[in-house]
Image 1: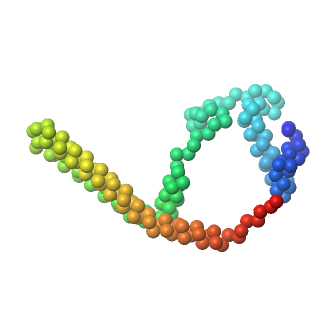
Image 2: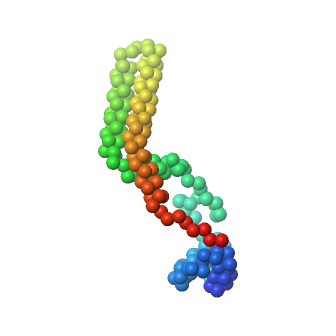
Image 3: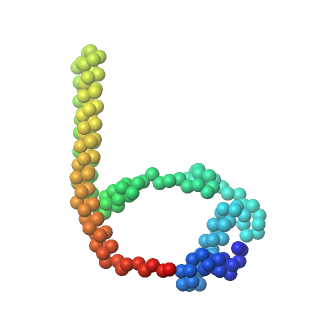
Length: 172
């Protein structure tokens, strides 16, 4: 399917809604088709083999994809936090958590100088580790509490937009 007319006929046969496309859209679709075919087959318009240069950003093999590591919940969290009205409060919580962690670590180091026995030092270090874990968990919990109004606002805006959107027509 190298020529434009064959491509157009095949596309119209597969997708009847493509009959509504303008000439400009057909040109773009055909150009995208040709570039995809060249990329997959590795041959140019003259039939000669092209050498594909591997980049460090795409170490995967041809035809495969790397799945995204961001879940739907992670994407929602990112959207909500990007549009948040409480970003300054979130920053204050982060700074206070880091200061608290620094104080706990500094206190653990200072107490190590006072204890001469190994068991007392280990207990002191374990106590400091538990405190650091508690601070991190408290920080995460406070972040969740900060996100609650933003998520509620995001959902209400999305539901209002869905109510205003006209229903889609299904073609047979």
